[in-house]
Amino acid sequence: MKTYSFNLDFLNQLHYRYIYGVTLFILLLGSVFKHLWLNHSFNIFILFIIPYVSYFTVSFVTFHIIRLHKYRLWFILVAGVALLIWVYPIVKWYYYSFLTAHGVVFYFPWKDGDAQKLFIIIVRGLAFVLLFLALDTVLWQKRQKIIKINELELSVKDISDNALLSGHFLFKLYQFAAEKKIVFDLKVLDFFQYVINKIAARDTRVALAEEWAYLKQLVDMCVHRTIEIKGEELVPGYIWNRSVPTLSLMTWIENAVSYSPIGKAIPIVIEWADENGATVFRVRNRIASDNEKKGTGRGLELVNRLFEPLKEHRVNVAYRIEEQMYFLVELKFLK
Image (cartoon, rainbow, N blue to C red):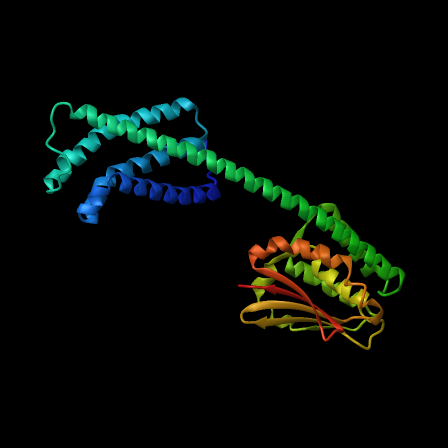
C-alpha cells in the first residue's frame, strides 16, 4: 500500500500563501464590483463574492494537492475540466435560485442567452485563478531558491569559520600545554581528542550544556590561573538546550587566560546572571599591561562571526572594556 508524506513546513507556507492570495483576490473583486459595497451594505458584497472566493479556494487546493503528489499534467487538465463542469450549475443555482428565494437579486430572471454569458464569466474566472496560481508558484519557487542559496552560503561560512576557530583553539591549547599554563595529563589528552573530533565532524553548533561541561574541564586544567565560577544555579533548565557555536565559550576562556596577568593573584571571573528575564553569561578578566595595545585575540573575531546567525534566535554577544583595565565578554539569551 502506497503512503504519502506531507511536508509540514511546505503546508504551513501554503497556508500563508493562500491568505495572501485570497486577500488580493477579494481586493480585486472589490475594485471591479465597487458599486456593490459603495451603494449597498457590505453584507451584499460578501454574498455576491462567495462563489468567486469558493472557486478560488477549490482551485488553489486542487492545484497544490496535484503539485504535492507530483501527478502528470493531464491530471491538472482533468481537474480543470471537472471544475468547469461542476461550477456552472452551482453558480447558476446560487445566484438565480438560492439568493432570489431569500430576497437578494443580483440578476434578472433567467432567460435565453444567459447560459453563454454565465459560462464566459466562469471561464474568465478560471483563467484568472490559473494565472494567479502560476505566478504564485513561479515567485515562490524563486524565493525558495534564493533562501536555500543563502542558507547554503551561511552553512559553508559557518563550517569555514568553525574550522578556523577549532584550529585556532587547538593551537592555543597546545601552546598552553607547551608553556605549562595548564596541567598536562590524561584529561588534557581527552580534551585534545574532543576538539579534534569536533573538527573532523564539522559540528558547527552544540548544546550549551555540552559546551559548559567542557568549559569547566578547561577551567580545571588551568591551574596556573585563578578562575571563579558564579551563578551557575541561576541558569534555567531549558537554557542548557540552547545552541551555541562549538568551542565559542571556551575560546573566551582561552582569550582571558592568554591576555590576563600571569599568576593567581587577580582572578578571571565567569558569571551567570538573570537580568530582566534574560540569562546572561559573562567572562571578566584583567588585561595584562603588555597586552593593552595588542587587542584581544583573533579568536574573538571568529566567535563573533559564528554568533551572527544566532541573533535571529535572540542570542546577543557584546564585548567591552571596563575601567581601562578589564575586558568583559557578555553573552545574553533573551526570551
